[in-house]
Amino acid sequence: MTRFPAAEALRYRIPFTVSFRGTTVREGLLLRGPAGWGEFAPFPDYGREPAARWLAAAVEMMAGAVPQPDSPDLLVPVSQIVPDLPEAQAVAWIRRQLPATGCHTVKVKVGELPVDQEVARVAAIRTALDEILPDGSARIRLDVNGGWSPARAAAVLSQVRDFGIEYVEQPCDTAAELAILRNHDVGVPIAVDELLRRDRDFQAAQQLADVAILKVAPLGGGAEVLRLVEQLQLPVVISSAAESSLALARDACVAAALPSPVLPAGLATGTLHEADVTNPSVVPVDGLIPAQLRQPDGDALARVTDSPPQEWLDRLDAAWSMTQELQLIPADQLDALEVAT
Picture 1 (cartoon, rainbow, N blue to C red):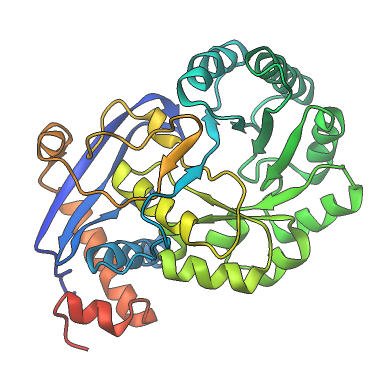
Picture 2 (picture 1 turned 120 degrees about the vertical axis):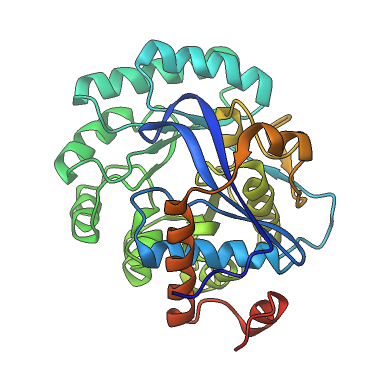
């Protein structure tokens, strides 16, 4: 198997302040290239082909090819993440985070509770938001990660539709289930995430979705995201995959480079981190983050990185081989890495 041509590779481990996506530590590789560092951090359940797209996004960073906004001083509006915490803890999280970050939109992880408890939790979050932002400007996004059946989704959404729900993200797992839900006319816009980054069913997304959630690394990089924006012709939310601030800064640049104004990006996941690889971390101030690339900080690297274990190196090399098979990396970026084409 061909080895990936990184000048240097480090494994980072960043603790979460709360459990997120079933883990308490975010882990990935930092890869040094000719134009700077890239981040390769596919989750453990990502197979070889999805990991290859993540690596293509890392190479784009390493080669200095990340799309940039026209102005270096642009700020990107973002939404605050609310992890899948019990009701009281979720409310406490919001009361702590919103005054600190200045966000007016929250993305709430849902999908694990019985219908009545799910509705009660969203209602409690709505009440907390109205107390913090009494002008009624706060908006709620629900993220289900495909966890509801169409009937369950309809049951919850019909009861929360008046709580200022901006959209529900991937309420059902498959395109067929989403089509059934559309027929229920639940009165809440539908956004899709897994349908795009996992299933790559872009045609179905155009037919079934009101909003496209685009995650830069899982989709293959900033240039690929910009291409998809043109193809999908849907309102777009650029969202993170809970990576380090190195990738969050990249994602903010991509969001700022979009051809038209977009909804607040899902790029406040730095508030989940107890540590980071940059100093300072990318976290919102007045609901905004800067669209400026960053590089790792030496002291920060010393605290959260070590030599990659063999399993990560094997995964990297497998993903690299797949990028070649699928021709995911443009020739100029391969040239930048001094890889023969």
